[in-house]
Image 1 (tube, rainbow, N blue to C red):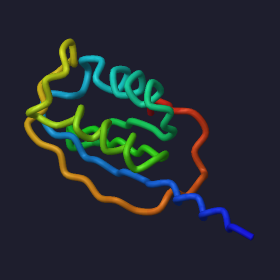
Image 2: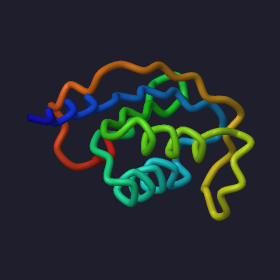
Image 3: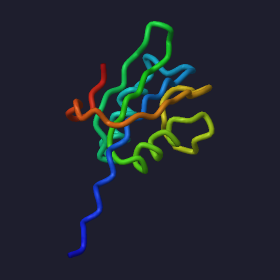
Length: 102
């Protein structure tokens, strides 16, 4: 009897975006891109001027979001100016519902 492959566990992307990304609609833009990709999580302003993006879903969709966040992204109409992004990967926790701006 053939076995069904185990589903791939979801990925959790945590990214810290540097630049002029607060007060310009950047979190709203991230939320829109994340929802288009079927991701859940949040985008939050940090006290040091960065935006933290936490996204959970398929690794491929999280990677697409990460590519759109980067300073070299060719994404038109992205608000603000991104000078750098640092990120880390982990396994999805499954505690997020929707994608919100904090």
